[in-house]
Image (cartoon, rainbow, N blue to C red; front, side, top):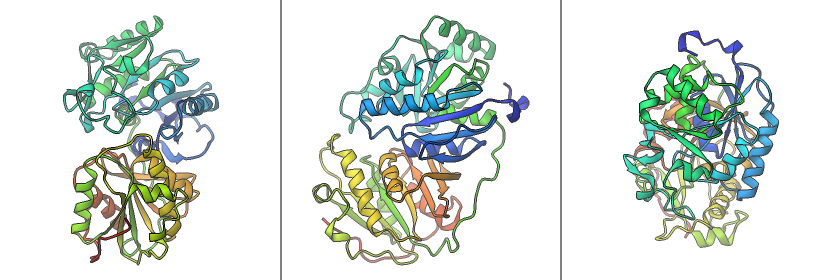
Length: 419
């Protein structure tokens, strides 16, 4: 389906099933026909429209995650609907179990996990991070096991690699290669090193039957978005006084770069409170005694994070994220805007606030997405591993000005907090 022949009214619905909130927001921001991000079961959209649903499976057990994916496929997998499963570009999460549930009953499975904008590519079926094979990096330092050596190994099913030579051989050739491989029953793993590679995969996908399902990162989602025309204005009404409202930044990621991002904010006057793990886990309901009298005045930027430790315990991470979210929800001012990094923590906090849908407004930078709640609260989400050292500054700036431009923060003299 070439770009200049796109007709939304004649296209099937697209339903994107994401495993966490930041990934859902990433997808929604690059799909022009997406109107909202569902955090609760929602209706299948009409023809030509897109639904992005956060299934919130990353913080579930393997069995729970597979069950949620299977339920979503049953809900949305009817005639006239194309299904895409958003996966982590580094194959984290319950990749194999969710892929199996997603592929059940499909007419075939195409897998495209590359995300060139984030330095994640796939060559010879092996995920590479800035050119280094995933299994030779420390990208899985917070995961419970070693990284897979290939996409096929992560899938745990019979898979056939479509190499770059075939990805770049022209759309008719690629379409034929995918059709012939799918007819043989194998999952088709697509190599890609550039956005142009993903554009080719996306165009070939749209020539395949709707019963063929796709697993991929935000990269293939963005490629589908590029084929579907220009984004329409989606900024709904916000709350008045964007520059005066407090901004609460919740950093729920163990990524090593988080400290440098927080430092950029504190140098501009933001207050930073780092909670140590033991007290948070001792008060899983959010009743940490140190926040009983905590206030967030107008124009203040407050950063909340979990204090770094020498060893990351993967088993404790979900509990820490939930405890941090509940702690924040206990004192969060109703007028405060939010910056949330780490999909699990972001979803936990929005659940505590009873938010069931977000309106995507646009990207601040790659992966950082400005959204609004139904009552106009600004929310910027971002995966924990994304962004340079100025990422949090830019995200706060987007809320202050409703743009991606950096703005000065209100000075604050204290950077202490509960231990």
